[in-house]
Length: 548
Ligand SMILES: Cc1cc2nc3c(=O)[nH]c(=O)nc-3n(C[C@H](O)[C@H](O)[C@H](O)COP(=O)(O)OP(=O)(O)OC[C@H]3O[C@@H](n4cnc5c(N)ncnc54)[C@H](O)[C@@H]3O)c2cc1C
View 1 (cartoon, rainbow, N blue to C red):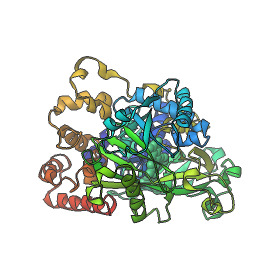
View 2 (view 1 turned 90 degrees about the vertical axis):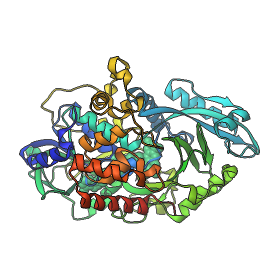
View 3 (view 1 turned 180 degrees about the vertical axis):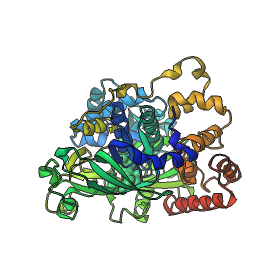
View 4 (view 1 turned 60 degrees about the vertical axis):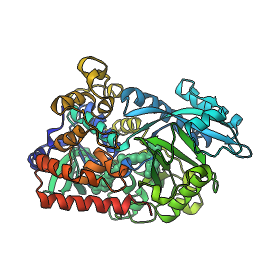
């Protein structure tokens, strides 16, 4: 069942009626954390509503490195608990959402005189595989390496170790989780900014909260809910700052923030580059140790292209400004590429697009000083999530794309009040493998990835028989997204429902006329409105997705 409030008409009809309901939970933020919360809350029978100020997954959840992984870096730094949780989440997601989350072989090349050595890395991989309960890693010869990455520097390279992680499309994963939540009654609206939350009465009287929401295309509305959960990622303000500031509400009946007041949100930016496969050919992911600082980078095959990333530096700009790659980061990434792929002779002109995101990293080090002033390197900060109470409201922040399910469970477990409806299916049935039977077998695999049980309806409505040139997408997906998947602006369609805008160096000018016709058909946009949207989309691409 598709959410009927995600069509253009449905949105206009449903927005005014949000005030008629008394919600159990309002979730602020439509990234992977918010999507996971909406699924988990709906599954347990709560009446839940998610509000996102921009598009779904427009924050960090479309700007990650796309890995669903245990994190060998966390393992190497001794974060065994986090690695175990993430490895198990990886295995589970590959089973739950085949195609959307897919196993990816990666190799660590070993060079004479450079760490990690074959011996030490294989010892690490034994532990990594032990946590997964399956042996994946194996040795590769120099010939195997050249076959998988023909332009990788072979000088001094004596072997490689292959191991297993997984890869996804983060924005499409977020949307898929929202679609699953909608099947269970969860509602989600994009382009709805939560302007304020106000305690109605003491929490002991079960009074709940008033939430002021400003939809982009509708006057502000005030909603009532028993509980608010903040899942605003890098936009979350640090508890101590909030406790010391005007938001502090000692009369709220909240569990004391107490020891959690030591948490600080440390925004850390990471950037990526995307190249055509033929300029940087790979059939497996590759781990690269940066020659300057020994940080781990990845070059990964993704969507028929090669992505390279990431950086890890303090994001000092305002979170109100667009997040984009800086010259020093681009230089840093190219330095690694020149070192490892000299034969590719890559320059910024080869780069199709870039993207950058801000990790909502929680620094738990020091209560008084800013963590980074303590000298902790960005890559050394722990990546665990944290759930805390403040002013009677619940916060979920930090963690990883990979672990979104356990993060959501952790937060929803903290609610003291009971839902009205019975508990529905548990996580492991998310996107059940119904597509192994009957008519489903006729549908292209990539449609199952994104649409799960709805893939059949999509294929029956608009047969998926024509692909968009140089992309993994079918034209039918454009129709489907415009009709059913909450597209409000053109960039929602071209940068998140699909990633077409990242795959074409010119932003897909060749599709412009066809897109104008589709937007008229499904969104009722006239020529003028389409031109405005096209300009907006191209400006976004130019400003935040262009190589410098
Ligand atoms: C460079 C980089 C690489 C990464 N690579 C990986 C990886 O390979 N694997 C992995 O597992 N994890 C990875 N991560 C981590 C992962 O991407 C993030 O942990 C995750 O996406 C955070 O999701 P979130 O929902 O908490 O935050 P976000 O996705 O940022 O969502 C928060 C949302 O809240 C919204 N919001 C804020 N204020 C309001 C308001 N007032 N009203 C309504 N909405 C609001 C924002 O618009 C935003 O969409 C990476 C992160 C980065 C930055």
